Length: 205
Image (cartoon, rainbow, N blue to C red):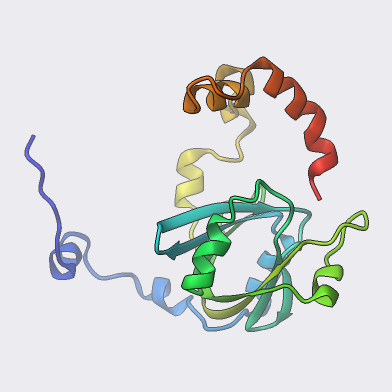
């Protein structure tokens, strides 16, 4: 079947029509009390950035409220221990724009935030986010430009929180298998899986 690319916004809008009024009126430039409640209840968010090497979307997670609200226009996100690829942070050094998607288990609505971030390595700020006496190396200070909630359709269709839709982890390739395939066998395998299971609990922070 031949492709039918859409290459301009007029053509795109002619396919979909005008947005519903509520979808525009729900957008604010700050956290309303309700939007703040979503941020403070969320144990997970996706951070989307873009830089010279291209776009990136990276998961961030911790206990509910790990993203702290400094005020109605400012969020603080600790950069917890990871693999040191620094994809998101490298992008933010070049382009401070970012987008956040907050998810709360059992809640089908999500919260979307657009803004600009500064990577702050201030020791006192980082110490305020310490867990088990381990502070993050940096904290993202996000200046909010836009906030709105996303309706439940995507999560309802995906059955994301439905226990009956859960996938048994053993039905998919293990982490060690994925790494072995991607590295041509240079790394990964059963030994990697075994060591990862032992290493993860002590390396979260």
